[in-house]
Amino acid sequence: MASIVMTFAGLTSGYVVSRSALLVDNRWLEFALPSAFYAATAAIVLSSISMMWAKASVKRGRQSTLVTALAVTLVLGLVFLVLQIVGATDMINRGLYFTGADSNTAVSWVYVIAALHWLHVVSGIIVLIVTLIRARKGAYTSNDHYGLDMSAIYWHFLDALWIYLFLFLAFIR
Image (cartoon, rainbow, N blue to C red; front, side, top):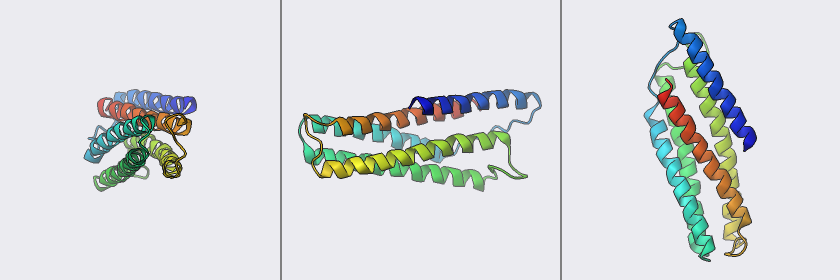
């Protein structure tokens, strides 16, 4: 997680430096983030809540509720990814391209930052799938839920990272 933090710290720092340099030349394009990014943010916040529900369920020994809560978290994670794709499609439909003659540096930064987070969310989805399969097999108990705890830490980390990135992109335009 430390390397992920450093990666995104570098990217957001690069964004700020690039923005500062291009604003001087009046070449920085200001544009609204896709509305789907706002909905995706809501989905990922809800997924953290459902992950907390999963952790509370295992601690109380409620196996079926644990499985349900993990399934809800997984579905919300997938909804997040779908909404991110909808958002990227919206940007393309508005003529905001990642690369090419009609592209702009500001837009390219948004694509790079968002896409790199998407890749990490895909890894989180894989972790959730494994955790859900293990939960269905009864691998987690009220006394032994270390694997679930590690999954939850990673998932909450990804959620917090997106919230940071979203707020960064929304306010440093």
